[in-house]
Amino acid sequence: GAVVSQHPSWVICKSGTSVKIECRSLDFQATTMFWYRQFPKQSLMLMATSNEGSKATYEQGVEKDKFLINHASLTLSTLTVTSAHPEDSSFYICSANLAAGVSYNEQFFGPGTRLTVL
Amino acid sequence: QKEVEQNSGPLSVPEGAIASLNCTYSDRVSQSFFWYRQYSGKSPELIMSIYSNGDKEDGRFTAQLNKASQYVSLLIRDSQPSDSATYLCAGRYNFNKFYFGSGTKLNVKP
Image 1 (cartoon, helix red, strand yellow):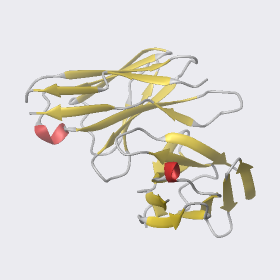
Image 2: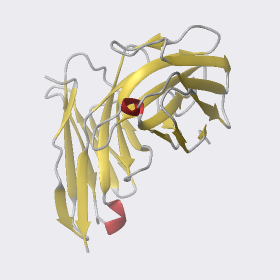
Image 3: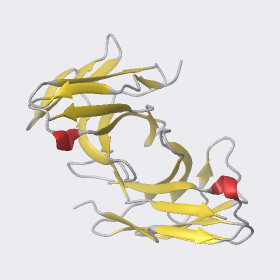
Image 4: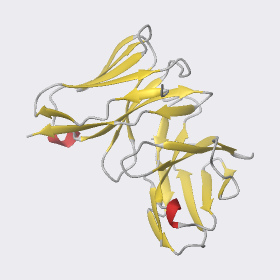
């Protein structure tokens, strides 16, 4: 159990375009999902917390107008990188935590999306 | 001080040896801790969680938590080359947000 999927797994786009990344919890309902970014040889940096049915909470320094997050259902959160630029190239990973049960409080990660902006 | 700190390594151990990975944390982090393994180019995979003082064993892995000294460790017994990866320590804060350490790279030499 606790499987999280992401789509696409990789994407290459031109500078100035927008890219949408989907994160799905496949076998459980996730009221909260998290979006991270990881640059090469660096650790995970939390970008935002996505709550079903409400606005996302962004970490300090993360532009909410650039990284649009929508958590439309208990199994789907999306991250849209708007007007992407080369410096946005990174590995984007979502995670979800189980609201109850044996694995309560544990975060399970999706496989990640590698974004390259030309 | 970072909220969760790890030695970046690399830590090199011979196959079959015990690998010991350590992590310290600040007062901002709650008492829930997690160890993740991350292979190059992949996302993190949860290995173990630990909430109480003491040891928690799962197969070849043992997590240790010492709240008084604010450190958490992961021991890998009978290390295998397939264990070569970066190991991330994470601590929970502010509801379910996690602070992640920068990771320790482990190399297990055949």
